[in-house]
Length: 112
Length: 114
Image (cartoon, rainbow over all chains, first blue to last red; front, side):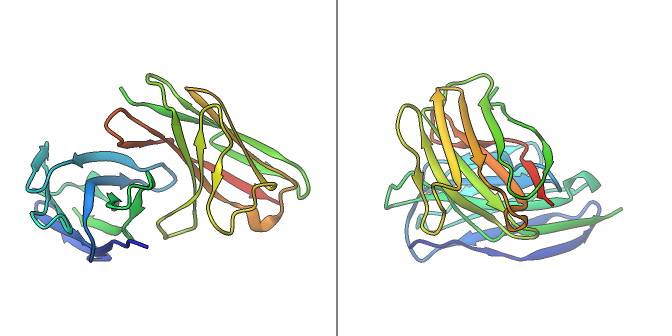
């Protein structure tokens, strides 16, 4: 089946730094979703992308749907301590099963 | 908008008993809901697809007789873990599908079977 490769697996950065993470696949995706999960909580939807090339911002977060439809990235600018958590990319593949495919997650730690 | 609740948020039960977890979409209707299981430091693992008014569709390897799913209305799906055993201890998360096919997740339920 379709898979998503998310990188990096973890990041440890200084407060104020910018962060970038991405997801890639060998096959086409129709929708990309970025989530953040805090410990003991469910994932919270950050940004949804529906068209190739689409660039969408949500506060300090910016995400893009790659032109090839096989990748997406999430950038966080001027990180703050509350950005700590696990970020997941997810998407609907071209097989249209209606099931979300998840990346492995990026664990972000921010040092004050 | 797009709020999904789960109840209970955590539960401890004895081995052999059954536990019911509720998933509600509070401000929208969801024809489809999903149930996931998550192990520590891992991504979400899809267990089953819950469709309102029809039988749930289970992923390979998930026992349908052990994890009973009922989607009786457009805002409520329930997962019942029957005859729970310690290996069923996990974090269970539901999601509800919005109009643009985005999935909104509940806060999760921590199940501990003793």
